[in-house]
Image 1: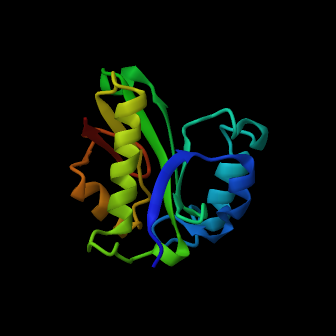
Image 2: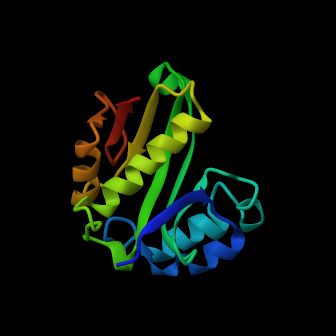
Image 3: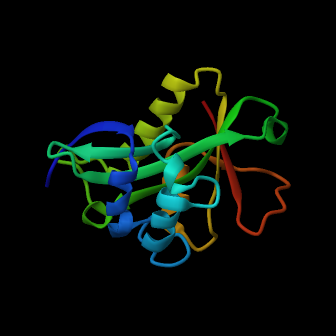
Length: 166
């Protein structure tokens, strides 16, 4: 298995390879097709803006192949009362789904840690991260639990909203 060597903003050229991605193993709404749309021309960011929106992140291996993608954006401060980021998605390349690094860590955990590090490095005033997950995404819920996310009490969304203090 190849090693992950860098986290950097992705470019439109990198985004083309996003078809091999799935969000926590899902092939449904948040599977490869949706990730590709999100990366290339999603609801919030058009393909032409990918190169200027440095919150679209990619993890690359030693051959500069895209292994994982993530996107975070500002969260409305009134939602949690502090400066927060909203984790729109994280997704692993199919080759890394349900696998572990040579040291035994889950690749999904490594990706989540890299995203949190990126948020703190580039947005040091951030005090919380929000994430909304489809109720059927068991792996996503487990990932958030491992990182200390908790359900937001009183949230009225169809899918639960989670928050983690940084």
